[in-house]
Image (cartoon, rainbow, N blue to C red):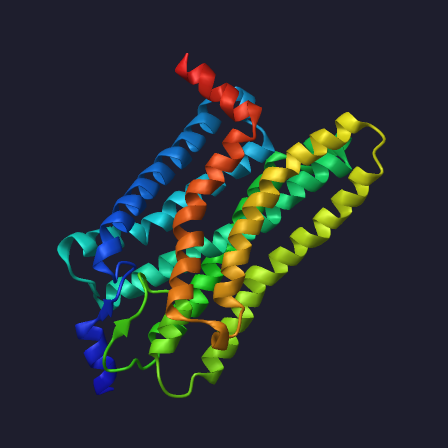
Length: 306
């Protein structure tokens, strides 16, 4: 009880992403630029999809939700990290750490499920294009969006109380740049078996089930594309799904390492690199990949600028 009270009042110390002074200025400038570009590009995507009638389709409705989620979860991590570097300290209170953990798990969980469910749009567009307006109606889009947010919220409400109620080591030093689940687990002591099982179950649900849906759907899509006789049809099918494949591969690969790979394979440096990749770089790459490879988005941008 005394240790819990000390944690509640003293909080934690984040080691951060800039431990080496020689490279810290370059990393700080790079992350500032990435954060600014991620907010701007995702904001532009949401704005274009909202105002351009040509983009009022199910696919772009889901893309606008993806961009909004990217803006939310990068904003729960990066501003705090940049402010800590400027002020020269990495302290975070117990309540602030809890809030960051809760918001991060909710937003990133919603993105896991949303990316997994977005493959349904690609599947219908290729496998049954004649019934696409019916099978991807506005109601279905809202169900997909609500399901992804429900999954993220459920994951957040389950793991946050369990994690933050654990007894933590007296040093309270988090060798990371934000309050992430595996790092908080390593900081805790005592019997963690029940929590580890709960966390593993949530991560399997949050990652492997959507990822399995993606693999199964794309297997069926590949079979359908292989059976097409038209070269133009194959090219169009590849264009339709290639952006989603790239985003899913980048996001899920880093997240699978962080949450599913056994802890014996983890090191603090690797954890920081993979976490930075899918929490800082991916929100920038998502709109870039979708916009550069999509003529509708570039066309909408030209119309707005004109």
